Image 1 (cartoon, rainbow, N blue to C red):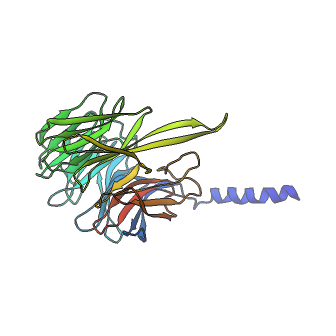
Image 2 (cartoon, rainbow, N blue to C red):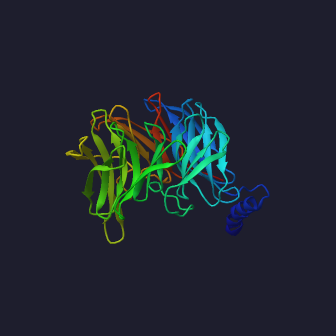
Image 3 (cartoon, one colour):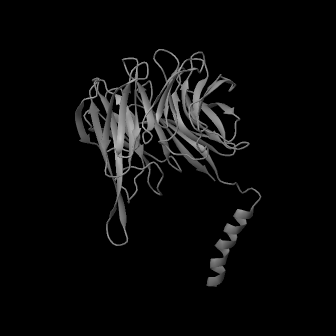
Length: 369
């Protein structure tokens, strides 16, 4: 009798898997919008064809959203997915230059987008997805390797055109994609972020052999100052921002694997916020408890998100069974304003941005069975 009891569930499971209606698992994109108090306003799923992965989100001038990433139709290709202000899926723009994938994007004047790719290019596309121009930025990297902190990032330059940072350099382009100047850093310096400075120049930074670094460039690409912060273990630069007080703040984390006993280890991340003056003077430093998925808020604080995992002391970007997605808002002195949770994100969270209404939008990967 026991044998029959055990056999029946196995038979049911096997029959279910062999049914003609069985769906092959695919990856989709989930997106979540919350208000300034952490309350959910909407969430949605963007279905891929057959798989889709996002890497960066922006809010567009019409109040909607655009996500750069990839799809696997006819091989890995660059895709830009759009949502309207209510979270309803809109355009699905593709650049069929397989194998490649989208990394970072900015809304372009007159409509369309400028998007960086794993093929080390900045491509300008119109609202229908037609490529208007493509400019090579650097050496080609693996288009199928997805890492949150790698790849070229692009921003709109205050004087028009674009600025992009990646590998060990920063590139300034005009609106037609012509390179105006290019600044190379030391070979071990990997640029991972870039922001515009009020002086007309740019601040960029990333990791190097000894830790993290940040540099100020003037409007012609010449270095004004550079600061390096050594770490004992390999770091990750989370964010660089210009605060409302006029300081440049960077947050970086260094993770260490620590033995708990003979068989168990825990991973401790030491996360530090450093403040620099406009002249690059080191004026402050303090520990902060944040995650690598973080955004600076307009009031001088931060918002970050992730999932709890018993082996880690911080929130991690990949999902953990039974752990809801947590979103935490900090004020300008680092105090928690609110800490809320959502049952969303079957495979992790990729990015969080602050929206024009003071709320936040997030997205990540969703495993669709």
